[in-house]
Amino acid sequence: MPVDFKDACCCWSKLLTGRACKFYNAVCCPFVLCIWATSIYCCGCIRVYLNRGLYKFCCCLCRAFNCCWLYTDKDFPPQDVSLGDVKGDSAAGDREEGQKFAGQVKWVRGGKFPLPKDKQGRQRRMQLFSEEVDSRDICQGALGDCWLLAAIACLAEHKGAIQAVFRTKEVNPRGKYALRLFDGAKEKWEIIIIDDHIPCNKASYERDGSCKPLFSKPNKNELYVMLMEKAFAKFCGGYSALEGGQTIWAIRAMTGDPARLFYRSDAKDNWQRKDLKNFDDPRDKRKCGLYARDEKIDNDTMFEILRKYHALGSILSASGSSGADGLVTGHAYSILQVRKVNDGFMGIGGKDYKMVQIRNPWGAGEWKGDWSDKSKLWQDHPSVKKQLEFEDVDDGAFWMSWADFIQNWSRIGVVDRTVDINSLSLHVKDDSACAPTLGCCQGCWEPSLASAFMASANI
Image 1 (cartoon, helix red, strand yellow):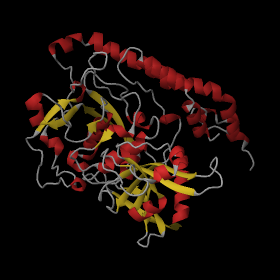
Image 2 (cartoon, rainbow, N blue to C red):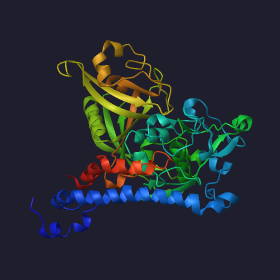
Image 3 (cartoon, rainbow, N blue to C red):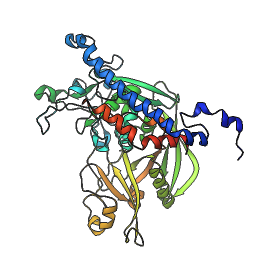
């Protein structure tokens, strides 16, 4: 293919985003990486320290008199009006008509949740993130938004993806947080500002001061799941607007990437692809449609396609379960891994096993069939167990064979996650003095920065 000399000479303006010609990208890569490391991690680290200084020293009077200090979102206030007509989770058999939680809610600031002391006797505090974002941090409550929590769980499997949604990088003393969500109808990002008031069980709070969130719950001391749920509630028009939805819509809202569903045929012998399209409806932020592509995919090919999507870092989900052997109908699950292993010597010459690892966002209630946590097949096939690094843990995650998957699931969601320089952000694991510096050093040192630039540059 002939090279356009003019384009090759005039593409310097695209160098920082990796959109220049490959020669310039390759030659200038070390210098561009230094610029991005400074911008994302070093400047981000400095901003965190400046914000801490501002909160600690410049706002002393406001804090002392409690005047204009703690932030309360007037557009999405901590009142019943923000809940809407919540009916509960139909999949959990907990659905009621009418305003189920009216008068039963105590709005408590997430940053003030009481926590037990650590092993050294120090008082623990809530953090925006724990040391590592983990899909096991995500536990569903009484709201029927398993589709959303499954999307967050899927995203949590990709390093840095959850942090990229947050503009605020650590716990905020004022309780003010900024998140970024993608409006697929308008094809643009929106910044969602929320406070940290979390709807909790009023009776428990008044009885012993315990804070029991009604909806999503923290697994340890992290705030991010509850804040993401609240940001989506504000984005969509209330907590009740989150009941029932498309997992791939939520993933697209967090990543801005194209989404699609694969539907299994009634005969269970092929799959059809349907692409997601958002619609601009002021009354329904989540309104969308699925448009079929003219392609039928047999089961063996579908497994290889899923393996490729998994290898490329795509975000995967499963829905439309049969309800058999512990699976819950009307409930969305996240797909964590798609693997093919061989039980022969050094993985050669034996029998191939097509396996899929899935997780229930409730954090409990797992598949009880073949290759489940208590299945004897793990003891009968130690090589498979070792290669898949299987552990019997009641965390909502479980393995299934591809054959059982075909029989028990009718829909697979796929979102092509874009990994480029814009997907990177500073990760501050807690509010200790050295945490921003540590996050900066780790970000600059880890290969994710180079990988993201090469992905942008298509090197």
